[in-house]
Each structure stands twice: as C-alpha cells, then as structure tokens.
Image 1 (cartoon, rainbow, N blue to C red):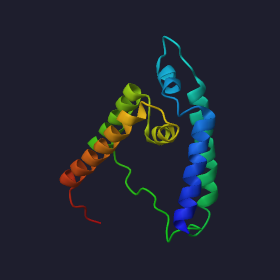
Image 2 (image 1 turned 90 degrees about the vertical axis):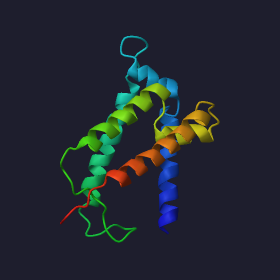
Image 3 (image 1 turned 45 degrees about the vertical axis):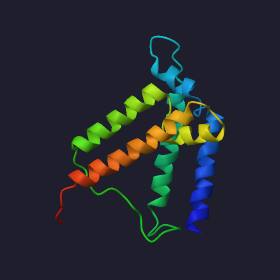
Image 4 (image 1 turned 90 degrees about the horizontal axis):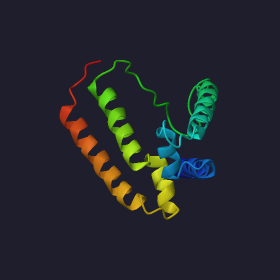
Length: 143
C-alpha cells in the first residue's frame, strides 16, 4: 500500500512540475538571471508550494500517527554544521549551472529533454559521492 501511495504522490508532484513549467530548465535559468530575462514565476510556484506544505504539516501533525507508516520521520537536530551549509550550496550551484533540480530533471527525462541525459547521471554520481562522504565523516552520536 505504501508503494502505491508514494507512486501516486510522485505522479501528482511530476504533473505539478509539468503544468507549472518547472521541468523546463530555461524557466529556472531565467529566474536566476536577475539582470537579463528575469522571470519571477518560479517565486510564485515556490510560494504556493510553501503555503501548501505549511497547511499540510499543520493538518497532518494533529494526528497521533501517519495514515501510511508506523511513525512520523521528523528532523531532531537544530544545529548548523558544515554539511547543512555545503549541501545546499552545492545543490544551488548545480541547479544554476544545469537548470535542473532532481524533481524537474526526472520529469523532464520522462518528457525526453536532452539536457537530462547528462544531468541525471551526474546527479546520481553526486548523490553517491555525498553518501560516501557522509558515511566517512559521520561521528558517533550519543543520546
């Protein structure tokens, strides 16, 4: 059942990316081009997503447990370390250079966009490298 719920949510997310035009890297690059062909529509898509997530979290977290799953998986750490700074910085640099982030890249791959043929393998390689670094630098934590 969990697989089907995740599949349905992924398809809904992908459809939202296609409808909003976020699977087009030119839209993202135009948003980042403040002094050229700036397109503010990405900010509205992100703002809408933040509002939906805000309301969704407020509704879901009133429940004692999730509908699908045994518990909620919420972050427990609140400190800022090198990983929390470096990770988003690398993500942003890749997004700016490639015009894709993971969700829209996978959606664009399904649409046959040629840029994704280089981006997806690089993304997978980066995810693999990040996991290796995280496993190699993980310090044992005490409760």
